[in-house]
Amino acid sequence: MEGERVRVPRLAGVSAEHFTQHLYPQVGSEGRLVRTFPAAPDARKPLVLKGLDLGPCTSKWTVDYLSHVGGAREVKIHVATVAQMDFISKNFVYRTLPFNKLVQRAAEKKHDEFFISEDEKYYLRSLGEDPRKDVADIRKQFPLLEGDIKFPKFFKEEQFFSSVFRISSPGLQLWTHYDVMDNLLIQVTGKKRITLFSPREAQYLYLSGSKSEVLNIDNPDLAKYPLFSKARRHECLLEAGDVLFIPALWFHNVISEEFGVGVNVFWKHLPSECYDKTDTYGNKDLTAASRAVQILDRALKTLAELPEEYSDFYARRMVLHIQDKAYSKNLE
Image 1 (spheres, rainbow, N blue to C red):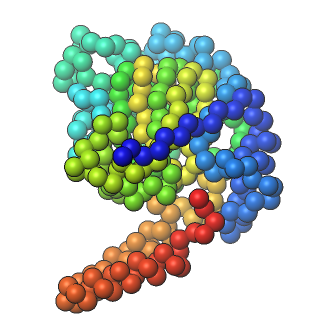
Image 2 (image 1 turned 90 degrees about the vertical axis):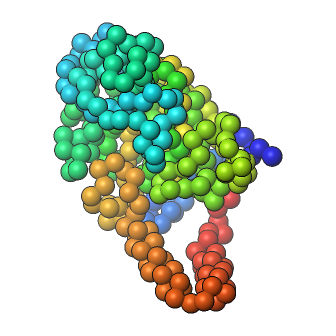
Image 3 (image 1 turned 60 degrees about the horizontal axis):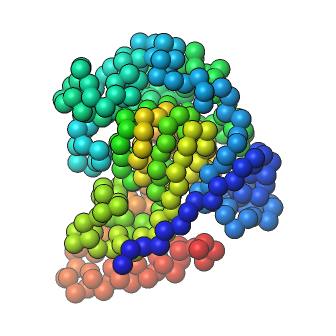
């Protein structure tokens, strides 16, 4: 039986004030969610925002314009011979291209110049100057394009974390994953089909770290992933000029239905000390969560010292204890 499908709500003309006060819960100084205003039923859920002022980028960022203004800066890209990229098995290779050549190739279906095959696909997730230390920021890496795009002011400037340039070939599918920060996906040109899963659906997604092992979400191998059929999915189609709010921890799977350019804007909605200081991508688990996982791993190793009958019994008791003490009673 297939899981329930929910259409992501679409709202037009949402102001920053309305978003922060009614569509988005406030965050207290201790990192706890404090609703200082009555929250709408859709608070902390994905939302497509239409009609925002994004600047002239939606009309200006053509292939020719990006190739000319973006210049020949070298960028590191994913190159794949299949549509469904898999970060776990790494069914793609990393290569480097001048930005202008990447844009031109990504817009093509067949290539005269290529790395692996004439129909290979390309994916750019822009990086900082030194990816180990610096976050991506389109304003720094592509300063000549900065004036074309306006970020929706739905968060305070001091909360800003990164702005990530994304360019995809038609048909390319990005693996299902989650990020630990809230973000806005600005679809500047092209169309994307996006499927999202609530954090509550994690038990059905066969996780390896922050990624799902289920690549083909539309035709999954249910013999291998039987629980995936229970996952409730939230779906939307993003068109040029649309902005998708993706709350932290919501899994998302992205298919580029045509060549397109997008920009993700991430911000720290929790106090800075909650985040891993070495995280330049916005996807490392919060420091407290990482410590908890390490403690759990040590506990499981200790249980393994017992006979199987005992380790099984006490493991089940631990699960019940976690459910009782840590599962939220306030979330759907």
